[in-house]
Image 1 (cartoon, one colour):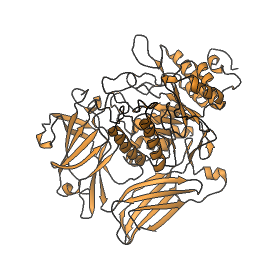
Image 2: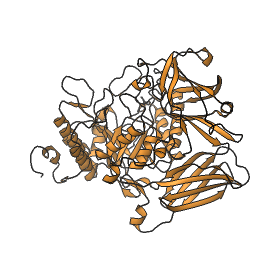
Image 3: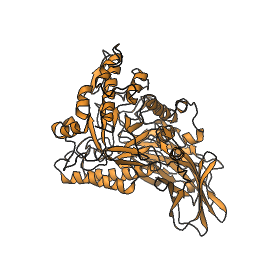
Length: 617
């Protein structure tokens, strides 16, 4: 990533940056704004008394919702209502459809159109779509949404949303509509889904195209791929079935330098423009645009590889909360967080216990950050929790499938939701099952089976350790022998790292949570794994921990880390920046420590002397 890219005021056209579905872009219109609102236990829209208004897409627990008083905790059942007036261009003709998209509604949503039940969706983090064609043909129509969110339900994939008062590492819950609601008109026969899969061995991109309906005779799909103004591939195919796979072989320049110019990496986030044209008898029915990227992810010889090149991961944890809007961001905030991570020297983020808006992931694709993606955890082990987790996870795998920045999937974190996994075979099988499901549905990325500890199966061996002394951190993880000795000698968090004989073997070892130092000014309260009271001590502590992790990478103990965390989140004040995104310490020093600059491998104590007025060793 060059400095010029990081300081751009306008990286891409607004229509691309703000589109809720960046890989399949068509004309669209946001329905965000003031909706009628009522906390009401009613089960039918005609029985609801709407008492006020709320600003969609902000949850009632946030100030941005516009409610006279923040609703916290929110009642279990919330009702929303709005009237939609289609523009002349949006009124669907005979062979057209008008689709109503919801970015996310927490936890379950029932949608009513003109008082009649239209659709139901479960899952607080994933999008869904409702066909409102029939109502739209008559002009103005009413949409009501009944959102049900029982915060006491521990079998619900909730992530960091607290089930009581926010405490320690758990945050205020999010209820109801909390992502963009939008309209899109399409032809009855349109591209319903598109997935891009790269293959560097063949130097090609494969498009998996799914149509909304079985094709008519003579249906064709043309797929074009560009690098700027240069056409890299152009395929025109007769459609046989509703789902088709189209491989696009790219011209392979052969020479590594030229070849690498077409590959996506965090420091070279190359995106290729795409267009899919669906036609019958020469008539164009659909023509969505988007982007794709070439890159590979693998683990080999204890190293994490991108494009077959060792790529040590220097990540920060991203919780994705804002003080006034909760879990809801916007394009400006997403881009600022990505730039903040880059400014601090990181080449990746771990999206922790939250499924981020695809627009956030777009900015990681565009500006260059490698992502680990967590499945938000449930906290009970029941048939219901496993069913919900599996359903949500399958939707997430589809949602992020074409994003090159996503490199590792994390179906479980620290055995959350598997409380008795050391003793219960069924819980061990649940970890194996979600690992196997993930690898089955996506063989192009790695999977961390249970991140941090109690791992039964995984492509990487992960460790969580919040020790605040850098020398101790280096002693534990500075080389492979130290790690293997500590596996049985030390259980950070009181948990065993591997179960059922699972060991690092030839897998990359990633210190996927460490740090957690909080700067809490004197007289204020705040939570962290280690608390300091002034900015100088904060910078020195964080700098020394980062330097120890970097030394462990150089000495081949680990092949990456994830620092906790990028920003403060409510009472958890261990961010490198506050919740307002203002860095706490010296950015240049922290960035240098992340990048491992001016590092002297011969002196393990360089980080403890460097900033005390002494000359570099």
